[in-house]
Image (tube, rainbow, N blue to C red):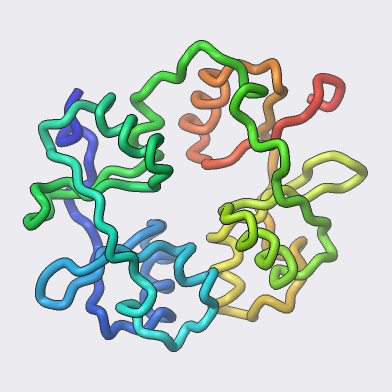
Amino acid sequence: MKVSEIMTKEVASVSEDTKARVALDIMLRLNIRRLLVRNGKLTGILTIRDIVYDGNLERKVGELASRDLQFVMPTASLKEACMIITSQALGSLIVGNGNDVEGIVTERDLLRYCKSPPSNVGDIMNIEPVIANRDATLKEVLEFMKKKWVRHAIVIEDSLPVGIVSVRDIARALLSKGLDVKVGGFMSLSPFKVTPDSTVETARRIMVEHNIGFLPVVTQEHS
């Protein structure tokens, strides 16, 4: 398959002068994690993490957007796109020739089609995830997420994962109540988990089938 067959053709964009608050509202309403930024022409790409990590909703998106635009040709294979995203730790690639934008392809798009290598979750898992409890504030959790440059934290109760806090969850709070609120009120439940012995392909299928981007890894007795 080629990138052109799975890319999203209609890509939302905003001007450089758009306030972060407006951009964040657009992303939450459209259930997307990134926007293209333009000033007549394409000048950057803005992610939900860029806004949440900065925290100032009155800033212009032109001040927050990344100028490091990574393109892939629409005729590229999915394997080529997967290699670019994984080798450079990217969340998305702009589809086009460097000037004209034809669409966008994200890590989740590729996850649906790129089968995982024959290895186990324990070989690739993050052994030091951010962990929180229900009574921690989102502000506290966000500080740890920023230090580790991650998009998720695991909520633990009685030594077991009961929920996930994502950058998107924090974004909802940022727009409504601010971050001095407890994790328990904004976390997402975490019914799915894997063990270190689970295959990476099993984890991939769970994530694809349930449209999630993060899985807690637990020991066999807690699975």
